[in-house]
Length: 88
Image (cartoon, rainbow, N blue to C red; front, side, top):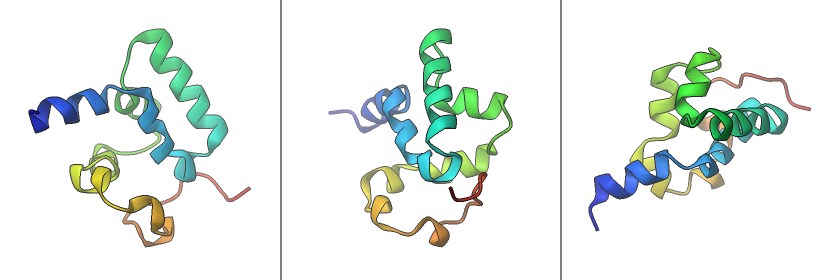
């Protein structure tokens, strides 16, 4: 399969919001996902519009390497991004 086409399909999926859950919180991610579906937008578009993360942060989080690695097993404190919310 064409790697770029597959990656593009993943990036259009609302399911990738789960990567942002530890950073933005479940409630915010739920809100973002619903907005994406209602407005036919990508996760990145909505997150940028709301000013929640920068493009550089999104590029890192959703990089191809992170999408296929064991990022879920890494503590988020070890990732080069700042948490947007406080721990619940």
